[in-house]
Image 1 (cartoon, helix red, strand yellow):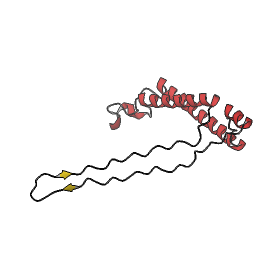
Image 2 (spheres, helix red, strand yellow):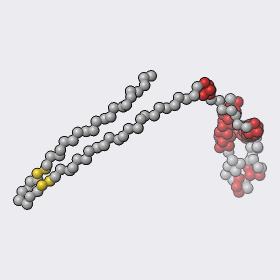
Image 3 (cartoon, one colour):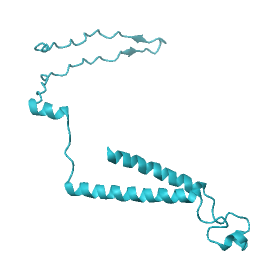
Image 4 (tube, helix red, strand yellow):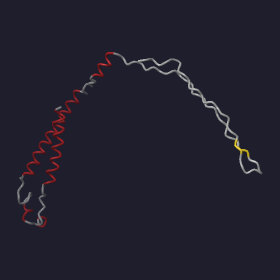
Length: 154
């Protein structure tokens, strides 16, 4: 639970650092600073190094690094102890009390055979322009096989 809270704090601090860095104005943002203007004589410009955004960024960075080191130390201690035991909960009790029932198999059944029907015969004569089609012989559909024994009732 504590590790989850630290992870949430870690992500929020990272988002905060990104936002504060993007909100800050760069030191060379003045128009004449690149050509030897008055603001370029100092490293951080004419305003100085400490305003709200830079102080906030500094403290967020400190919290970020401390959280990183803390999670790294926690992970290294967990690696020395070995993997945690898997908590199966109710499933562990089920496995200990009774074995799983075997799955019954269905008896082997042969596949029904389909009768092959010959295609209709077309008779044509040179004098006749119409074709005579011989009707196909009717065939009975194969009957479905009944199971040997009824299914067990639950």
